[in-house]
Length: 208
Image (cartoon, rainbow, N blue to C red; front, side, top):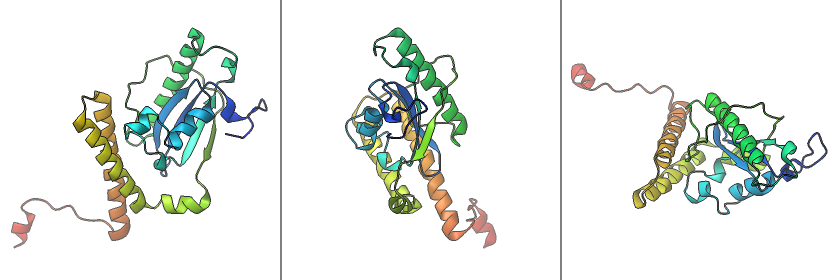
């Protein structure tokens, strides 16, 4: 956030912008926009301060390994309520969202709310970097640690769903998280034990 953009300003100080989070497999997991500055909005996500995504157990800040941001410097000085600001932000966010869907092996991210449809736009130059120090990265990227965290997140999200009248989007997020957990657990199984043959019902009887 303190890095300098082409205009010499700190990237995190851009009041308006769009951001994307990536996990340890470089899988896009969340897309958002801000009108309060990239620094503040992203900081609230990652320090577990109240955001809808974190509060509802949609996003686990622990899983965010890299961040990509698109500062919208051309909107600087405009009011947040300005119609032009809303259209520009929605267009940029929708474009990044479509980009994330194309990059995702699941064709999905964890956003629980339906993205407002808009015409895709030309995005400004983005800035992407890993946010985890080297000494923590090796620990946090371990698949067993990630499996445990992801399973806990799923359980918490499922509990929220069971206790409330929730949107279709939140249930869709649960499904996406379950797919992500299944893939990670399967990869770990193969990594440790090699290819595991899938048992076919009735084959055991034939063998006997």
